[in-house]
Image (tube, rainbow, N blue to C red; front, top):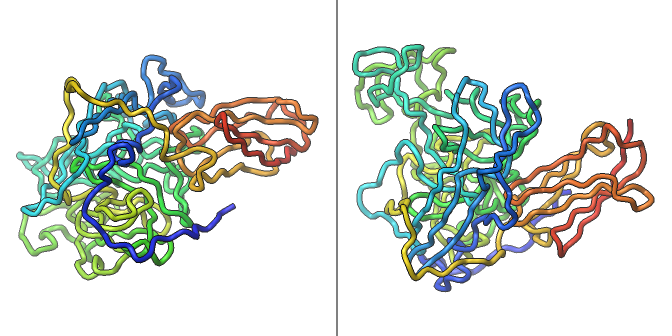
Length: 456
């Protein structure tokens, strides 16, 4: 079911500029706008039926722009089902009514790089927040108490705990969780159960998905923008910066240090001791367990210290600086995960309380996701099926898609909706007889049909 990309960009002169035409600038056109009234949904522990949050509109509510900025109004809630959070997190994502002001032409920071911080450092194309690597806790607080243990505390900021390692038990299937009402991802927003090596069982009782599905045969979609305005892509891209060389996994230039005690940073700085490396505090528990490898970043498919590079992408054929949501060879998230530990550009994205006058509303639907898109690959599994039949797309669509289960006589026996901004839906087959069926998917204009067998 995997079709290789044959179109590549060659002999392209890289230009450090975005599109001059605001109508086609991906900073404007890439958002998943809620045009169908989709609302948020969430799971609670012990109940595999999603609860509909009717008052929380999902994805992005509006996009408007002028000559310098795009303004994105969103709730911060995705259309894919979120939760539950099995580490005891009492919070639940809610409507945050965010209004992001994003530059149309971001610029490189030629001075001292700006460090990423706690809280939102970017926004995904469905309006969900991106956080950096940390969970806000370091090993010791000002009184020397162990912040990694039951006493808690924000810590002294010396050995900073990695959220991906420390909070794995509290991530939902889509690898997200809330801070207060702010649902967010620290890492690649693709579901745990789709990784090559599955490191969390949360997807087993709670069917869920994510913003996109990793595919090693295609350039990953544009999935968001960092707080310096530069785009964020998924895990795979063109090997060479000019768009040639085929599709490869983009690799982090950070690696774990070879240490057994935590007494010094990678640059040799002597700091307050952290815990020795052991089963309770494994290597990778803290950001300072990593070192940056300058030689790695000189290889085309390895990224720089910000976790990005200047290169050609499908949306930017003339080239742009962009970040990648890095994973390792088993598709588990790889530090620094998305952006960081510093920004490449000048951090200029802000939230505003009200929109300025004179904006032009964007109402186009071009970009990520419809049935006619070459980037949209559909998987229908298992086949033959017994109790459940899953329909999975590689990229979250920009429109709702109707999915019908049709019997051999042409009768529609079940209908489901694959919501915009989501990659998965399923049929419950408990009341369906054995036989040959067809799955028909349409976005209102294009239709795709696949044969399936139901065997009890």
